[in-house]
Length: 368
Image: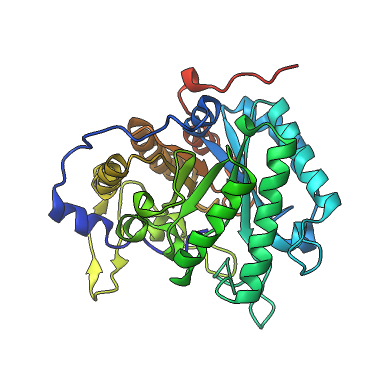
């Protein structure tokens, strides 16, 4: 999950006054079934595949029909490298691949597309806790070799064994190091060579925030970019609302409202004071739509959401506003997450907001 505020969004956009996008993003290479599933909204599934110590291959099986019944079009399965890697060899572990393939088929049987999300490298901080850098050590040549080998094998097996109308490959999550860009230039051609028609997510660093995506992700300058790559963005602004409670931190959620006054620290110094509301979110995202149109790319927000400790009223109101903006601009989204510390399962208004995608965009039912 994101660890940043998206701090400069409102300030920057208030000054730019950019006009509406002049052209629609390019979707011609992405299967209609996947586009429809992403635009319906979906949820992240953690942590049965996310933390190898808690691995349960079938842990989400009973949740899939509930997600579909709530209106979802897809799930993003958060996976730790060490949950599917054979030791530290970089090779795909056979039994875990079979379990992953079975999951994708179960999701498909319920009409859900799966985003295979390699969410972390399995590395922890020296004190034994999860690092805030999910792609920890991805700058190391040894880790790059392992990751590159693993993703190549996943892509190869997807191509050989799974209907690509029902799966998206997310090779990484929230990389932080600038070295990610050069590594991504090595990684994506390998994935594409192994799976010529896979839909694949590409991303910027710094928790995949909007500003970094616009500033440094240059899709049409990349030799490997084709019309089956999707730009993956995360948004948790304002952080004081969305992360008002988090494991290991005090619960600051009581009394939080949407709209509300939230102060965000700026790296340039000072504090951004003011009311965050739907209009602020619209201003914050406006440059992204122009950038996407100019680069003719499809954008997916694979993480939006709020802490589960926040009351269902403000949670739902915030996500209703945000999702309506994403819908209006034709993008997709996945809420973090289904039933744990950011869970939406037990919050009726929040769940409806996350999974209120246009019903006309529903993916085709699977073939019997």
